[in-house]
Amino acid sequence: MTIPKDARINLSPEDIPKRWYNLASDIPDLKPPLNPGTGQPAKPEDFEAIFCKEIIRQEGTTERYVDIPEEVRDNLIYLNRPAPLQRAYRLEKYLKTPAKIYFKREDMSPLGSHKGNTALAQAYYNAEAGVHTLTTETGAGQWGTALAMVSNLYDLDTTVFMVRGSFEAKPLRKTIINTYGAKIYSSPSEYTEFGRKILKEHPETSGSLGIAISEACEMAAKDEHICYSLGSVLNHVMLHQTVIGQETMQQMEIGEIEPDYVVACTGGGSNFAGMTFPMLGQKIHGKKFKDTQFVAVEPKAAPSLTEGEFKYDFGDTAGFTPLLMMYTLGSNFIPSAIHAGGLRYHGMSPLVSAAYDTGMISARSYDQTQTFEAGLLMARTEGIIPAPESCHALKGAIDLALDAKAKNEEKTIVFCLSGHGLLDLYGYEQYMDGTLQSSDIHS
Ligand SMILES: *Cc1c(COP(=O)(O)O)cnc(C)c1O
Image (tube, rainbow, N blue to C red):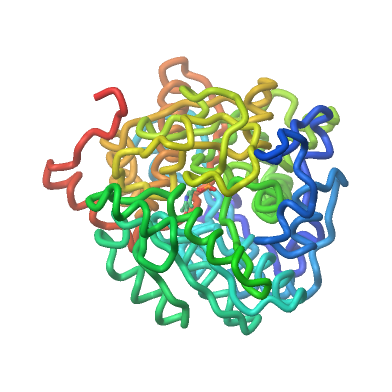
Protein backbone atom coordinates (compact mmCIF):
# COMPACT_ATOMS: atom_id res chain seq x y z
CA MET A 1 0.00 0.00 0.00
CA THR A 2 1.27 3.44 -0.78
CA ILE A 3 0.72 6.31 1.60
CA PRO A 4 -1.99 8.59 0.19
CA LYS A 5 -0.80 11.99 -0.97
CA ASP A 6 -3.02 13.82 1.48
CA ALA A 7 -2.10 11.76 4.57
CA ARG A 8 0.11 14.62 5.70
CA ILE A 9 0.85 17.77 3.75
CA ASN A 10 4.06 19.50 4.76
CA LEU A 11 5.45 22.85 3.73
CA SER A 12 9.08 24.03 3.80
CA PRO A 13 10.41 26.80 6.05
CA GLU A 14 10.48 29.19 3.06
CA ASP A 15 6.69 28.75 2.78
CA ILE A 16 6.16 30.46 6.15
CA PRO A 17 3.94 33.47 5.33
CA LYS A 18 5.67 36.84 4.88
CA ARG A 19 2.76 38.94 6.13
CA TRP A 20 -0.22 38.69 8.41
CA TYR A 21 -3.76 39.19 7.11
CA ASN A 22 -5.98 41.71 8.89
CA LEU A 23 -9.72 41.01 8.87
CA ALA A 24 -10.34 44.52 10.25
CA SER A 25 -9.58 45.78 6.71
CA ASP A 26 -12.60 43.90 5.42
CA ILE A 27 -15.15 44.83 8.10
CA PRO A 28 -16.23 48.37 7.24
CA ASP A 29 -18.08 49.48 10.38
CA LEU A 30 -16.08 47.77 13.07
CA LYS A 31 -16.95 49.34 16.45
CA PRO A 32 -13.84 50.82 18.08
CA PRO A 33 -12.85 50.22 21.71
CA LEU A 34 -14.14 52.96 24.03
CA ASN A 35 -12.48 54.82 26.86
CA PRO A 36 -14.70 53.91 29.83
CA GLY A 37 -14.10 57.33 31.41
CA THR A 38 -15.22 59.45 28.46
CA GLY A 39 -17.36 56.98 26.50
CA GLN A 40 -15.42 58.15 23.42
CA PRO A 41 -13.35 55.92 21.10
CA ALA A 42 -10.13 55.00 22.90
CA LYS A 43 -7.03 56.89 21.75
CA PRO A 44 -3.64 55.24 21.30
CA GLU A 45 -2.55 57.01 24.52
CA ASP A 46 -5.21 55.11 26.43
CA PHE A 47 -3.22 51.93 25.84
CA GLU A 48 0.26 53.32 26.43
CA ALA A 49 0.40 52.43 30.12
CA ILE A 50 0.35 48.75 29.27
CA PHE A 51 1.33 48.23 25.59
CA CYS A 52 4.27 49.31 23.43
CA LYS A 53 3.66 51.60 20.42
CA GLU A 54 3.85 49.08 17.59
CA ILE A 55 1.39 46.75 19.32
CA ILE A 56 -1.01 49.70 19.77
CA ARG A 57 -0.58 50.60 16.10
CA GLN A 58 -1.40 47.05 15.02
CA GLU A 59 -4.41 46.99 17.34
CA GLY A 60 -5.98 49.86 15.44
CA THR A 61 -4.70 49.33 11.92
CA THR A 62 -7.05 48.73 9.00
CA GLU A 63 -4.35 47.88 6.45
CA ARG A 64 -5.05 44.60 4.76
CA TYR A 65 -1.63 43.07 5.41
CA VAL A 66 1.11 43.70 7.95
CA ASP A 67 4.64 42.51 7.09
CA ILE A 68 6.09 39.93 9.46
CA PRO A 69 9.53 41.16 10.63
CA GLU A 70 12.24 38.91 9.24
CA GLU A 71 13.50 38.03 12.71
CA VAL A 72 10.03 36.91 13.80
CA ARG A 73 9.64 34.87 10.64
CA ASP A 74 13.02 33.19 11.23
CA ASN A 75 12.11 32.42 14.83
CA LEU A 76 8.84 30.74 13.84
CA ILE A 77 11.13 27.80 13.04
CA TYR A 78 11.57 27.33 16.81
CA LEU A 79 7.82 26.74 17.01
CA ASN A 80 8.06 24.02 14.37
CA ARG A 81 6.40 26.05 11.67
CA PRO A 82 5.15 25.42 9.11
CA ALA A 83 2.77 23.00 10.85
CA PRO A 84 1.52 19.96 8.90
CA LEU A 85 -2.03 19.54 7.65
CA GLN A 86 -2.96 15.92 8.26
CA ARG A 87 -5.86 13.69 7.28
CA ALA A 88 -7.59 11.66 10.01
CA TYR A 89 -8.03 8.45 8.01
CA ARG A 90 -8.42 6.17 11.02
CA LEU A 91 -10.92 8.47 12.70
CA GLU A 92 -12.96 8.62 9.48
CA LYS A 93 -12.89 4.84 9.26
CA TYR A 94 -13.99 4.46 12.86
CA LEU A 95 -16.90 6.84 12.28
CA LYS A 96 -17.76 5.05 9.01
CA THR A 97 -18.29 8.45 7.46
CA PRO A 98 -17.97 9.38 3.80
CA ALA A 99 -16.63 12.74 5.01
CA LYS A 100 -12.94 13.61 4.79
CA ILE A 101 -11.49 15.06 7.98
CA TYR A 102 -8.28 17.10 7.96
CA PHE A 103 -6.61 18.78 10.91
CA LYS A 104 -4.01 21.50 11.23
CA ARG A 105 -1.36 20.42 13.72
CA GLU A 106 -0.70 23.31 16.08
CA ASP A 107 0.02 20.61 18.68
CA MET A 108 3.47 20.10 17.15
CA SER A 109 4.90 23.30 18.55
CA PRO A 110 7.34 22.55 21.41
CA LEU A 111 4.96 24.70 23.48
CA GLY A 112 2.10 22.31 22.75
CA SER A 113 -0.25 24.96 21.35
CA HIS A 114 -0.70 27.74 18.80
CA LYS A 115 0.00 30.46 21.41
CA GLY A 116 3.66 30.89 20.45
CA ASN A 117 2.71 32.51 17.12
CA THR A 118 1.68 35.75 18.78
CA ALA A 119 3.98 35.41 21.82
CA LEU A 120 6.94 35.60 19.45
CA ALA A 121 5.69 38.72 17.67
CA GLN A 122 4.77 40.48 20.90
CA ALA A 123 8.10 39.70 22.57
CA TYR A 124 9.91 41.02 19.48
CA TYR A 125 8.08 44.37 19.40
CA ASN A 126 8.41 44.87 23.15
CA ALA A 127 12.15 44.15 23.09
CA GLU A 128 12.52 46.60 20.17
CA ALA A 129 10.72 49.22 22.28
CA GLY A 130 13.13 48.83 25.20
CA VAL A 131 10.73 46.99 27.51
CA HIS A 132 12.53 44.67 29.97
CA THR A 133 9.64 42.77 31.56
CA LEU A 134 6.38 41.33 30.26
CA THR A 135 3.44 40.50 32.50
CA THR A 136 0.56 38.30 31.58
CA GLU A 137 -2.24 36.05 32.72
CA THR A 138 -2.65 32.40 31.94
CA GLY A 139 -5.65 30.09 32.32
CA ALA A 140 -4.73 26.54 31.44
CA GLY A 141 -1.07 27.49 31.27
CA GLN A 142 -0.37 27.38 27.52
CA TRP A 143 -0.12 31.13 27.09
CA GLY A 144 2.14 31.62 30.11
CA THR A 145 4.35 28.82 28.81
CA ALA A 146 4.51 30.40 25.35
CA LEU A 147 5.47 33.83 26.62
CA ALA A 148 8.01 32.38 29.06
CA MET A 149 9.69 30.44 26.27
CA VAL A 150 9.89 33.22 23.67
CA SER A 151 11.09 35.75 26.25
CA ASN A 152 14.43 33.95 26.15
CA LEU A 153 14.77 34.69 22.44
CA TYR A 154 14.63 38.43 23.19
CA ASP A 155 16.20 38.62 26.68
CA LEU A 156 12.99 39.64 28.42
CA ASP A 157 11.82 38.80 31.95
CA THR A 158 8.30 37.47 32.25
CA THR A 159 5.83 37.36 35.15
CA VAL A 160 2.78 35.17 34.80
CA PHE A 161 -0.43 35.33 36.87
CA MET A 162 -2.06 31.91 36.64
CA VAL A 163 -5.74 31.39 37.49
CA ARG A 164 -5.74 29.71 40.91
CA GLY A 165 -7.95 26.76 39.95
CA SER A 166 -5.53 25.75 37.19
CA PHE A 167 -2.44 26.64 39.22
CA GLU A 168 -3.48 24.10 41.84
CA ALA A 169 -4.74 21.47 39.41
CA LYS A 170 -1.68 21.65 37.15
CA PRO A 171 1.47 22.05 39.28
CA LEU A 172 3.73 21.02 36.38
CA ARG A 173 2.87 24.23 34.51
CA LYS A 174 4.72 26.14 37.22
CA THR A 175 7.71 23.87 36.72
CA ILE A 176 7.70 24.42 32.96
CA ILE A 177 7.34 28.19 33.25
CA ASN A 178 10.12 28.31 35.88
CA THR A 179 12.27 26.07 33.69
CA TYR A 180 12.00 28.67 30.93
CA GLY A 181 13.14 31.21 33.50
CA ALA A 182 9.90 33.11 34.15
CA LYS A 183 8.09 33.91 37.42
CA ILE A 184 4.62 32.58 38.05
CA TYR A 185 2.06 33.46 40.77
CA SER A 186 -1.30 31.96 41.62
CA SER A 187 -4.05 34.54 40.91
CA PRO A 188 -5.60 36.27 42.81
CA SER A 189 -2.22 36.99 44.40
CA GLU A 190 -0.79 39.11 47.20
CA TYR A 191 1.40 40.94 44.66
CA THR A 192 -1.20 43.41 43.39
CA GLU A 193 -3.77 45.68 44.97
CA PHE A 194 -6.57 44.10 42.98
CA GLY A 195 -5.42 40.59 43.91
CA ARG A 196 -5.35 41.48 47.62
CA LYS A 197 -8.84 43.00 47.34
CA ILE A 198 -10.30 39.85 45.74
CA LEU A 199 -8.52 37.61 48.26
CA LYS A 200 -10.08 39.61 51.07
CA GLU A 201 -13.59 39.48 49.60
CA HIS A 202 -13.49 35.93 48.21
CA PRO A 203 -10.73 34.00 49.96
CA GLU A 204 -11.93 30.69 48.49
CA THR A 205 -12.18 31.87 44.86
CA SER A 206 -10.72 29.63 42.15
CA GLY A 207 -9.85 32.83 40.24
CA SER A 208 -10.67 33.69 36.64
CA LEU A 209 -8.95 34.96 33.53
CA GLY A 210 -10.61 38.35 34.09
CA ILE A 211 -9.02 38.66 37.54
CA ALA A 212 -5.61 37.47 36.34
CA ILE A 213 -5.70 40.00 33.46
CA SER A 214 -6.44 42.76 35.97
CA GLU A 215 -3.42 41.78 38.08
CA ALA A 216 -1.06 41.63 35.09
CA CYS A 217 -2.30 45.01 33.79
CA GLU A 218 -1.91 46.62 37.21
CA MET A 219 1.72 45.52 37.42
CA ALA A 220 2.43 46.78 33.89
CA ALA A 221 0.73 50.13 34.45
CA LYS A 222 3.06 50.93 37.36
CA ASP A 223 6.36 50.88 35.42
CA GLU A 224 7.07 52.17 31.92
CA HIS A 225 9.57 49.37 31.24
CA ILE A 226 7.01 46.73 32.10
CA CYS A 227 4.40 45.94 29.49
CA TYR A 228 1.45 43.66 29.45
CA SER A 229 0.99 40.95 26.88
CA LEU A 230 -2.35 39.37 26.03
CA GLY A 231 -2.64 35.88 24.55
CA SER A 232 -5.99 36.28 22.81
CA VAL A 233 -9.03 38.56 22.26
CA LEU A 234 -7.36 41.71 20.86
CA ASN A 235 -7.01 42.49 17.16
CA HIS A 236 -3.20 42.31 17.06
CA VAL A 237 -3.31 38.78 18.50
CA MET A 238 -5.79 37.66 15.82
CA LEU A 239 -3.47 39.21 13.24
CA HIS A 240 -0.37 37.29 14.42
CA GLN A 241 -2.22 33.99 14.40
CA THR A 242 -3.11 34.24 10.69
CA VAL A 243 0.03 32.27 9.83
CA ILE A 244 -2.10 29.22 10.70
CA GLY A 245 -4.78 29.81 8.08
CA GLN A 246 -2.38 31.08 5.42
CA GLU A 247 -0.29 27.91 5.70
CA THR A 248 -3.47 25.83 5.64
CA MET A 249 -4.59 27.56 2.42
CA GLN A 250 -1.27 26.64 0.77
CA GLN A 251 -1.66 23.06 1.96
CA MET A 252 -5.24 22.85 0.70
CA GLU A 253 -4.00 24.04 -2.73
CA ILE A 254 -1.39 21.29 -2.77
CA GLY A 255 -3.85 18.63 -1.64
CA GLU A 256 -6.67 19.97 -3.84
CA ILE A 257 -8.82 20.19 -0.74
CA GLU A 258 -11.99 22.27 -0.91
CA PRO A 259 -13.48 22.46 2.55
CA ASP A 260 -17.21 22.48 3.21
CA TYR A 261 -16.49 23.26 6.84
CA VAL A 262 -13.61 24.87 8.68
CA VAL A 263 -13.88 24.35 12.43
CA ALA A 264 -11.98 25.71 15.42
CA CYS A 265 -12.60 26.14 19.14
CA THR A 266 -13.07 29.59 20.64
CA GLY A 267 -11.92 30.85 24.03
CA GLY A 268 -10.86 34.41 23.27
CA GLY A 269 -10.96 33.59 19.56
CA SER A 270 -7.31 33.51 18.45
CA ASN A 271 -6.87 30.02 17.01
CA PHE A 272 -10.24 30.32 15.32
CA ALA A 273 -9.28 33.70 13.87
CA GLY A 274 -5.85 32.44 12.86
CA MET A 275 -7.33 29.50 11.03
CA THR A 276 -10.36 31.13 9.40
CA PHE A 277 -9.69 34.85 8.86
CA PRO A 278 -7.38 34.47 5.84
CA MET A 279 -10.07 32.28 4.24
CA LEU A 280 -12.85 34.72 5.20
CA GLY A 281 -10.77 37.44 3.53
CA GLN A 282 -10.81 35.42 0.29
CA LYS A 283 -14.51 34.73 0.66
CA ILE A 284 -15.40 38.39 1.24
CA HIS A 285 -13.59 39.33 -1.97
CA GLY A 286 -15.38 36.55 -3.87
CA LYS A 287 -12.19 34.67 -4.62
CA LYS A 288 -12.56 31.32 -2.87
CA PHE A 289 -14.44 29.50 -0.12
CA LYS A 290 -17.76 30.59 -1.60
CA ASP A 291 -19.65 27.67 -0.06
CA THR A 292 -17.43 27.04 2.94
CA GLN A 293 -18.98 27.32 6.37
CA PHE A 294 -16.89 28.49 9.30
CA VAL A 295 -17.84 26.99 12.63
CA ALA A 296 -16.74 28.22 16.07
CA VAL A 297 -17.05 25.73 18.92
CA GLU A 298 -17.24 26.89 22.52
CA PRO A 299 -17.83 25.24 25.90
CA LYS A 300 -21.31 25.21 27.44
CA ALA A 301 -19.63 26.58 30.59
CA ALA A 302 -18.64 29.86 28.86
CA PRO A 303 -20.91 30.19 25.81
CA SER A 304 -20.17 33.81 24.89
CA LEU A 305 -21.16 33.58 21.19
CA THR A 306 -24.14 31.26 21.54
CA GLU A 307 -25.60 32.77 24.70
CA GLY A 308 -23.87 36.09 25.31
CA GLU A 309 -24.91 39.58 24.34
CA PHE A 310 -23.23 41.73 21.68
CA LYS A 311 -22.37 44.89 23.59
CA TYR A 312 -19.58 47.00 25.02
CA ASP A 313 -17.92 45.32 28.00
CA PHE A 314 -14.62 45.27 29.85
CA GLY A 315 -12.00 42.71 28.86
CA ASP A 316 -11.11 42.10 32.51
CA THR A 317 -12.91 41.92 35.85
CA ALA A 318 -11.51 45.05 37.53
CA GLY A 319 -12.45 47.32 34.62
CA PHE A 320 -8.90 48.44 33.73
CA THR A 321 -9.23 47.71 30.01
CA PRO A 322 -11.02 49.85 27.43
CA LEU A 323 -14.57 48.77 26.63
CA LEU A 324 -14.65 46.26 23.81
CA MET A 325 -17.61 45.66 21.48
CA MET A 326 -17.98 41.91 21.77
CA TYR A 327 -20.16 38.95 22.60
CA THR A 328 -19.95 38.70 26.37
CA LEU A 329 -21.47 36.97 29.36
CA GLY A 330 -20.61 40.01 31.51
CA SER A 331 -17.19 40.87 32.92
CA ASN A 332 -18.27 39.62 36.37
CA PHE A 333 -19.16 36.19 35.01
CA ILE A 334 -16.93 33.53 36.59
CA PRO A 335 -17.25 30.28 34.63
CA SER A 336 -17.22 26.94 36.43
CA ALA A 337 -13.80 25.31 36.68
CA ILE A 338 -13.75 23.28 33.47
CA HIS A 339 -10.63 21.47 32.28
CA ALA A 340 -10.48 23.49 29.07
CA GLY A 341 -9.05 26.45 31.00
CA GLY A 342 -8.19 28.23 27.75
CA LEU A 343 -11.89 28.51 26.91
CA ARG A 344 -12.86 29.95 30.27
CA TYR A 345 -13.38 33.57 29.30
CA HIS A 346 -16.43 35.81 29.62
CA GLY A 347 -15.98 37.61 26.30
CA MET A 348 -14.88 37.04 22.72
CA SER A 349 -12.51 38.76 20.31
CA PRO A 350 -14.22 41.87 18.84
CA LEU A 351 -13.21 40.71 15.34
CA VAL A 352 -14.63 37.20 15.83
CA SER A 353 -17.71 38.82 17.41
CA ALA A 354 -18.19 41.12 14.41
CA ALA A 355 -17.81 38.17 12.02
CA TYR A 356 -20.45 36.29 14.01
CA ASP A 357 -22.78 39.28 14.20
CA THR A 358 -22.70 39.73 10.43
CA GLY A 359 -23.38 36.03 9.86
CA MET A 360 -20.01 35.20 8.26
CA ILE A 361 -19.48 32.42 10.79
CA SER A 362 -21.67 30.18 12.93
CA ALA A 363 -21.21 28.83 16.45
CA ARG A 364 -22.19 25.85 18.59
CA SER A 365 -21.39 24.72 22.12
CA TYR A 366 -20.67 21.42 23.89
CA ASP A 367 -20.41 20.17 27.43
CA GLN A 368 -17.01 18.87 28.54
CA THR A 369 -18.37 15.34 29.00
CA GLN A 370 -18.98 15.32 25.23
CA THR A 371 -15.64 16.84 24.29
CA PHE A 372 -13.48 14.44 26.32
CA GLU A 373 -15.30 11.54 24.69
CA ALA A 374 -14.16 12.97 21.34
CA GLY A 375 -10.60 13.38 22.68
CA LEU A 376 -10.45 9.73 23.69
CA LEU A 377 -11.55 8.73 20.21
CA MET A 378 -8.79 10.83 18.62
CA ALA A 379 -6.22 9.25 20.95
CA ARG A 380 -7.35 5.74 20.09
CA THR A 381 -7.61 6.26 16.35
CA GLU A 382 -5.02 8.89 15.40
CA GLY A 383 -2.67 8.45 18.37
CA ILE A 384 -2.90 12.10 19.42
CA ILE A 385 -4.21 13.30 22.79
CA PRO A 386 -5.76 16.70 22.01
CA ALA A 387 -5.80 19.61 24.45
CA PRO A 388 -9.15 19.82 26.28
CA GLU A 389 -9.77 23.07 24.35
CA SER A 390 -9.02 21.44 21.00
CA CYS A 391 -11.42 18.60 21.87
CA HIS A 392 -14.20 21.14 21.29
CA ALA A 393 -13.14 21.69 17.67
CA LEU A 394 -12.68 17.95 17.27
CA LYS A 395 -16.15 17.26 18.65
CA GLY A 396 -17.57 19.82 16.21
CA ALA A 397 -15.76 18.10 13.33
CA ILE A 398 -16.94 14.64 14.42
CA ASP A 399 -20.56 15.80 14.60
CA LEU A 400 -20.34 17.29 11.12
CA ALA A 401 -18.82 14.02 9.86
CA LEU A 402 -21.64 12.01 11.45
CA ASP A 403 -24.17 14.38 9.95
CA ALA A 404 -22.56 13.79 6.53
CA LYS A 405 -22.84 10.05 7.18
CA ALA A 406 -26.55 10.32 8.03
CA LYS A 407 -27.12 12.21 4.76
CA ASN A 408 -24.58 10.13 2.85
CA GLU A 409 -22.70 13.22 1.70
CA GLU A 410 -18.98 13.41 0.92
CA LYS A 411 -18.26 16.54 2.91
CA THR A 412 -14.77 17.87 3.55
CA ILE A 413 -14.05 19.09 7.06
CA VAL A 414 -10.89 20.88 8.17
CA PHE A 415 -10.37 21.61 11.84
CA CYS A 416 -7.68 23.28 13.89
CA LEU A 417 -6.04 21.04 16.46
CA SER A 418 -4.93 23.98 18.57
CA GLY A 419 -2.77 21.95 20.95
CA HIS A 420 -1.97 18.65 22.61
CA GLY A 421 -3.28 17.56 26.00
CA LEU A 422 -0.22 15.92 27.50
CA LEU A 423 -0.07 18.53 30.24
CA ASP A 424 -3.81 18.39 30.88
CA LEU A 425 -4.38 14.72 31.55
CA TYR A 426 -6.44 15.21 34.69
CA GLY A 427 -9.64 15.76 32.68
CA TYR A 428 -9.00 12.58 30.70
CA GLU A 429 -8.45 10.71 33.95
CA GLN A 430 -11.79 11.93 35.32
CA TYR A 431 -13.54 11.11 32.07
CA MET A 432 -12.20 7.55 32.16
CA ASP A 433 -12.97 6.90 35.83
CA GLY A 434 -16.46 8.37 35.47
CA THR A 435 -16.07 11.34 37.84
CA LEU A 436 -16.05 14.11 35.21
CA GLN A 437 -18.69 16.71 36.04
CA SER A 438 -20.94 18.32 33.49
CA SER A 439 -19.97 21.97 33.11
CA ASP A 440 -23.13 23.32 31.52
CA ILE A 441 -23.99 26.67 33.17
CA HIS A 442 -27.60 25.54 33.20
CA SER A 443 -27.01 22.31 35.09
C1 LIG B 1 -5.54 29.16 24.70
C2 LIG B 1 -5.97 28.02 23.93
C3 LIG B 1 -7.22 27.99 23.29
C4 LIG B 1 -8.22 29.09 23.40
O1 LIG B 1 -7.80 30.36 23.04
P1 LIG B 1 -8.19 31.03 21.67
O2 LIG B 1 -7.63 32.38 21.79
O3 LIG B 1 -9.67 31.00 21.55
O4 LIG B 1 -7.53 30.23 20.61
C5 LIG B 1 -7.54 26.89 22.52
N1 LIG B 1 -6.70 25.84 22.42
C6 LIG B 1 -5.51 25.82 23.03
C7 LIG B 1 -4.65 24.61 22.90
C8 LIG B 1 -5.11 26.90 23.80
O5 LIG B 1 -3.92 26.89 24.40
